[in-house]
Length: 136
Length: 171
Length: 329
Image (cartoon, rainbow over all chains, first blue to last red; front, side, top):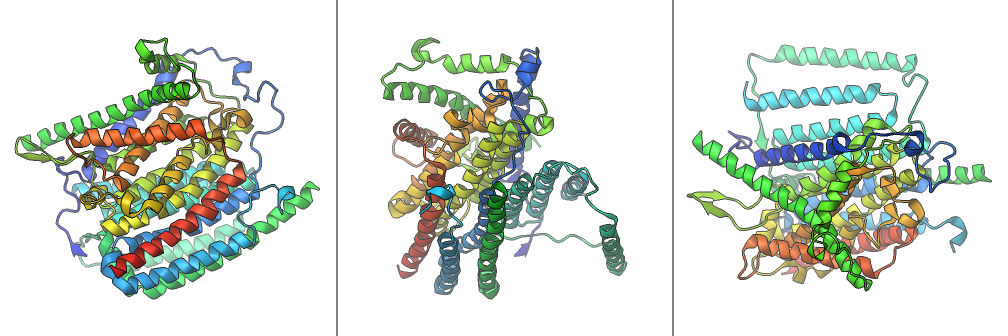
């Protein structure tokens, strides 16, 4: 790590952060236009029938904010854990060549632990999404 | 004031504002959205300070994974609109004590600074960062993998208990 | 100063061309898909508006713009209005780091054929795609419709599952090129495209990419015969159109990413770089449409099992195997 004079050159000729910011700005403008063009040009004749949530012609009953089934929450937790592990793997991958055998053995152990965890969850049924009655 | 410090203060203001909004919202889904914006702001701050790798990970892990988990939990527990006070008075006291301690620490730190201090920035290229972490912090990396394994097993067992309770409720 | 203004003008032109092509191609990809699907099913496909139905996308766009913008009862107004923008914006932003040609020399100045070459380009793509989940999840939640909510949940769970496989399948590519920059990754394939070295990664990436873009056979979030239109059920007018644009831009971006990571990007004989990238992008899109016409939809448990029990373990083993081979040779 070396101290720097100019953290990112603001020259538009260099494809660095400045051009990314300009691009993001252009994208923001386009999405804003698309977002509001319809309410500006479109019809405006609301009535209660139109505003009712669509349920294939049946009048909706009860709240639409159903409770999430628990398996989805488990997926999110597993995703979070594997995402963190993925971050370490990516950190290793970018200098895999220069880290050599030591780095490789470190990451092999790391991935091994990860796979053990995955298989444990698999065997314990954490990865089963079938309804209970069809499970073997 | 250079352009960088201007950007810094702008981002800092954005982060503080969105975080304040996140902790004051009654609607928890809105709170999650504001917190995502706040994390995005901190990622930009990391980028500004010359740590692009950490900036990317901040968005991927904090905004992309942890907040998705929060969103799922909020939707699972169906408490998106809490009528009662989210923070009871008994929680305000420890919070206030911590606040005073932090302010005191800040005062101590600020009083120790002699004159004008410049914010040193350095560019950590992803490769250099990874070299450092796998050369010097390899033990920590392996310990992290074991901690994550424990977290995985724990999450599985804790997550399955409400599933069983749900089934009982349905019967 | 003059130099700066000139550079800015060049940059603006570049951005305008990139965004223009992405959006125009998104519209014509819909046309191409409908035409091809028609042919696959022994129909003609759109053929009324203009010759070969070529004006169909324009007619569709006009229709969407002039439709009423309906916000359903008890919907969360702010989130409902902003969710489609998240989908479109993240899809468009992903293309910022994709290189589309060799450096161009213009009046003695080097004009790089990439919008932004940041050294964490690949992670930037993932960051954007992980933010894209919110468009689907929040759009579904905010609509106050049961179909939408179910579609939104399914979409979010599916996207996060396959994002893992998508990310892990690219680790060997990063190992081989030693960089996160997409420009560097293309440069590393000067001699041989990575698809020949990493066929397993290539297959995992394609499957995960199709699941990420939520298309048949992975279109459970919008399975029309069980969920209406899933998370976009309550959307109308251009807001619905934005989910559509987002999806088709996403397909193009994924096509470009497949090209960059595995098919040596813009490299190719005779033709100029951008044309090659376009050809490869369209070829990937064509394969996706072909698969859509061929396969039926997965069941939900099959979908999750393919992600978690096949793609993730295989890509992890692939990483270790690649690492071992790299160390040995």
